[in-house]
Image (cartoon, rainbow, N blue to C red; front, top):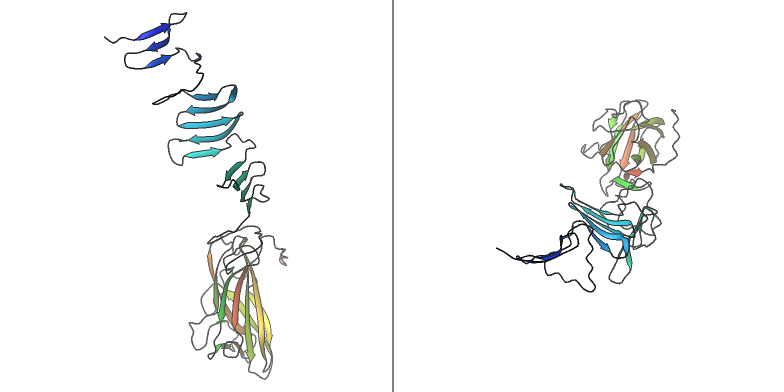
Length: 334
């Protein structure tokens, strides 16, 4: 039968015990105090039921509960690690909602990341961020989407994928050094603006709906009139790749532009259409792909008008530009 050594306290229970299997048991109740002056060297596993506390500093401790560790200093919870039983597992910083900034320094002791609790701002290489995301340096990204403003001392790249207001998001250019794009009509019924010789060469533009969901489409083209008189003609935008089908918005939107052509003259005309994808009849979603086509007709069938590009004519240029979310738009129908 195994033997051990023990010392009893006043109530007859063992306050110190050496068991025959090599264990040392100190204390017998949860409020017993074991004091070690000097270094405690444990060559094995140190088990605690819940707390490791700092002596003389009662509100600084490590708190162990089932599948969870909390680190408190001065009564504030700085780090909280928890396995809730299924992913995602959580590491929380400042879980007590105190004014605790999360700061990371580099190997030169310089701050390169700051999460400011009092302002809810994040700084990259910026100890006191002035914006929700404040970067003191260069940003590299394949895509940046913003619902409001982006400010910076410089922007690099071709700019075609910037989605804040006023940025070019798509462009189609029809040109040629020896061959002319020509779309001619004397009909009062709309026809698609494509090349009369090669119908597959269609005037169109494809763009991705930006964060503001507002886009200004512009078409600039040379107009030639071979008649002896002047007349009106019209250009219409549509989302239908057909000769004369109206856009899916029907008659609920200003899709038709009117202009004039003059006898034996030719010059560039500019047409513009404003799409507000936040409201009917468009109601676009951010990231949708949209393709727009164009149609042409004259008001009088005794007239002929021709749109030209390339081979001594100016290029036909179609552009799509984002419009800021806060643009001042005067709706004449409301």
